Length: 208
Image (tube, rainbow, N blue to C red):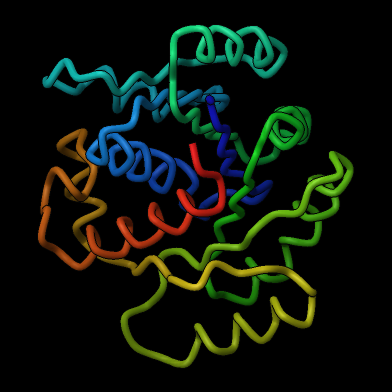
């Protein structure tokens, strides 16, 4: 059965594409067939895929949100275990389409006041699709009390938050330059450990 994971935030700069691509690599490393659908007109994920050299089974496709149902059906017929949808910021139509299609919605945000203030719009839009997102604290500073403060603020909003965080680590940037995931670039690094933990948690939420 094909499962659909949508990465949604109507705010820019939350790390949606980085999270989507690293999770895709992690699931592929766990021997799952993965398709990434790039709904962002900037096509950052597609460009990352085009620069890869390994010719593996990780497929990244640029897709307009209006064609999402047809492309998802093709992925199902092709035997994909998981489809990850990477959405654009400031595009509620694309985000709503991705939300409607999802078995699980991750809403990445940085533990900063501006991100916390901005998520209300994202949550409201997702709830129009009669879904509930799971917040993921992303690009978290290595030191400081911001995680606890952010978790408290999210709890007050009655939002579920993933139990693990993704740190603000240089490995993500270096891996992106090499058109790799952190598990390929630095398999034993802390960033890889964090992504693996999130991947295992997702796999329990939407087993395939």
